[in-house]
Length: 345
Image (tube, rainbow, N blue to C red):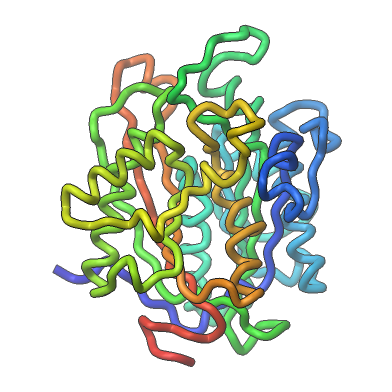
């Protein structure tokens, strides 16, 4: 059977930005956000439009850092949590960039980066963007209950992040600044159905997919947890993280020393009532742009596995009693031009 791992030669993430709301600014990564809005509306009239405004702001900041404009980007892979990616399409209207909408639930950040790396294999694509975001209020209205209802949240429930992250990628030779981080390899996630149908426990639905992806990537790359500074999952939260450890250790693998979860990084459990942790497209995107990529630029990280985790569900399938399928695409990020999958460029 051929390997699922796809090596990428000469691909760099050369600019990035993260924006968030009030709760995200209060959290541990708040000071590293490029922008935040206390109201959560970002100048829009509705929560749904605000989700798109966040994505547009994140992309604007990422472009500004690289002294570029929308017309300098060949293609953007972007998505959100709303039906038909409506937040994304509204947020991208001012930029005029050719767009491919993606919907991988909370795995959208990694999915977009993976697709951008593949697209840069074509000479027709000079620079590519990956963009995603989510909004707590819009997600509650679409997937659960309107906030006005005041429903009691389950202890296993996660708080959808009001956040967005934007990333610009290109080939080394086209980078406008020294290469700080390389996207050296990726692996498409495989849908995993573990029979979980509780929308208030998405961590349990996503953990088996995360375990499958980690086990497969390490096995096929002939690497061990110790070969990475960090193994980062998207938004498993407390419940999903506990289950992930159990599933991996049943297969003889322990990642406790290397593992961190974006759902446990975004908020401060001591002062913020976020139950089992953060979730949403914007969770791993904001954590990657505000925390992990700056750590590469500062020389604090040299190699990580990054896998956003997605709970693929809709209100309709839940009402019909169907289970929630999980998925976890993977990317490997390395400092500078190091590439353990293709060799240094």
